[in-house]
Figure 1 (tube, rainbow, N blue to C red):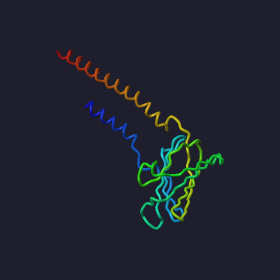
Figure 2 (cartoon, one colour):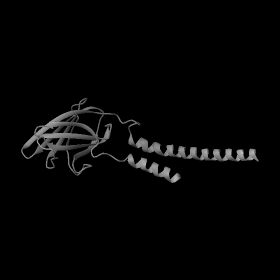
Figure 3 (cartoon, helix red, strand yellow):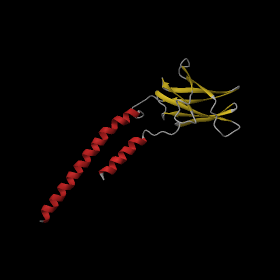
Figure 4 (cartoon, rainbow, N blue to C red):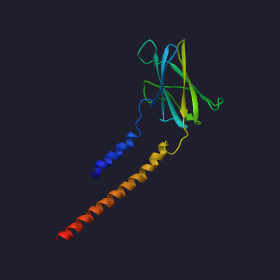
Amino acid sequence: MTRRYLLLILLLILTGRAFADGGRLQFRKPAGPFTVTLFTTPDPLTRGRADFSVAIERADTTGLLESAQVTYILTNQNNPAQRIVLHASRSQATSRFLQAANFTLPAAGLWSIRVIVRDGDQVGQCSGQFRVRKQDLATSERAWQIAFVPIMVLLFFLHQWRKKEVARRKAAHLATTE
């Protein structure tokens, strides 16, 4: 029985590390002759490390376009001078179908993004907005990892206490029936 609990705990730990191909869908928009689908991680977006992944399709077909060059231009709406220009690549993506850029979001607040797609002589662009939260203890992945150990220790001690309590009651019951 203990092995089953340990296996369950191990699976729960590992599934916390499992991510979908690109993260949370931010938008799917037309961009000239292309269709852009933007995914972001973590979810929710917080100040710090982030991954912006994009899938590019030609508007007139259903297949993904692998030869496109993708540029992101991010602008902090609270501080327009704070701009980030990124070039997406397949080497940073979590899936071979996506192009991604991994970087650090420097500030919380409302941000806008412009996605520029180039393939040969064709160019398209689209834009959108997203909100970046301040990283607090509840959204911090590290906080959950730190909290996991004390919770497991507490559960272990509760289990041991319960086991001793059941044994004590059995012994008391046996003593009264003799």
